[in-house]
Image (cartoon, rainbow, N blue to C red):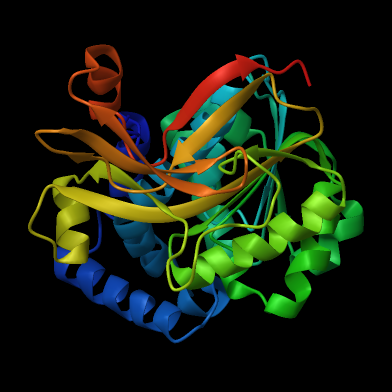
Length: 332
């Protein structure tokens, strides 16, 4: 499944950059990217409206695709979940909120928190330009997460995307527990699909399992992660690139592969329980289809769907890295 940026949102982001030369957009994105690689947070990396415009063109499509894929993976296991309220933490230009509203347009109450005023201004402009009432009417909180903790509302859906990577790792477990206290339904973290992003996701995983939260996805179990170092769990979302997206990143091909890792916890147990999740490339050969599954027993196993078993073979040949396989209703 592909999750391209909606046309109205694409037009709105491109309109924000309409008065800036393309060469300047590319230059500013290269500078922003270098600051991020140096470990600087968004408050430092993005310090003007023009830099926000460059960021939107270069990064918003991939972030939107990764968050959308993560939310869909969680909703697949919770088909009756339909939130009406959203709390978007470290929201940036509201990318995660736009993704959530694309999946659940019935969300009517939105709160966005970020330390960067340029991001919040952009979120407001994008909400107006794309005609999404929930963003236009959202509550915008310009603050650090630590300072605003006691003032933030609870929400049925709480999302924090691409933000753990900017935090001190010693603070993550405590922060995850505080964030969990604001969620009345589903909590989602999304991070870059890198070894460091995975390490930070694991800290949240351990902390919230100890809190008694119900692990939704991607893990089909609550045992210790079986992924052996130096391997790390991650998924990839392929997304189309517009012409301006390509030019902003100096790219030649018309698509981009975004590696990401996510973690979803719920207040209630799952309606569906996956037998396992594919955590490798699906390899098709003359003999059959091979893939690695992280199973509900907490183990990694190499599995094969032989060509002679036509039904399973046809199904698994279409499977993708990250797909869940289902075996039963749980009633948890």
